[in-house]
Length: 318
Image 1 (cartoon, rainbow, N blue to C red):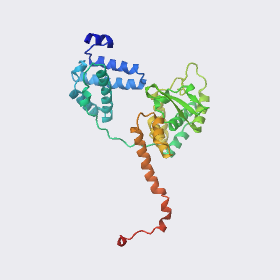
Image 2: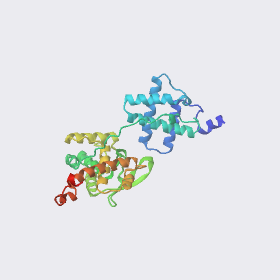
Image 3: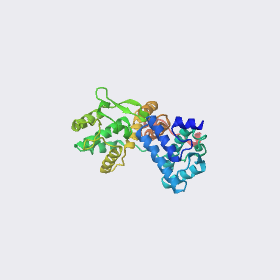
Image 4: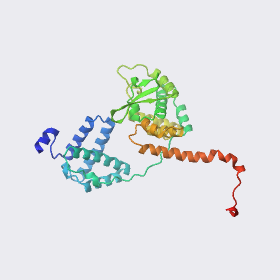
């Protein structure tokens, strides 16, 4: 039975940690996961392997990896970086061991005895209207400036992840319909609408972009090659520094989400627009929008205009 399983899976019945990791990554690619997701898993597994080497375990068999060892690794990751990074590591190891259980390589996942690190949720602070205006006005009328302005407008209006923005091709933009065809996590495609400001900004940039032989990307560098996630992040960071605003691509996504809700958008529609698989993250944006509502209401309460008509109650009357 063991030999039969080896022939079917193409792997040893007792693989080492490195072999098990390679099998898991191969499985992820077969599911057509996004390259960024596969690289995320690969990086976390690499750190785990390095920690094992430092502890003297080396290339141990996957069956020898136990819960106490995994808890020690997560503790190390929290001390080395942060609880959030340790939580990412746990998510990766849980996914790998879940795969190994399904493949009957291990009987039970040791991750069931490894609690997830508690992570304090930081308040998401979206950009203000004044900050957005200053960023747009700070984009010069050069190729790079027009490109960066178009990037700002697309991120603000559509809430894309930066990897989704970088993967946009010319054929994904429909000015007739006012939509972008976006490839989401897991390889699925989605049509997202954009407004007139985005249409104008994109047209203005694409005229300067012109035709580039063999390059389908919407957003390109000065050399005519597709922009990478890192390049977009660096461009936005420099633009933010220019006007004194702390800026990164994901902050634009936060701003889109909160603005959408403040303007009366539905939480379930927002979930679909952001490409979230559940409402957990969307609820955070709802909380921020509600907090802003409370603050604004105290400033512009409709009933307070008539405060003079409502006499305060005296304590003796209670």
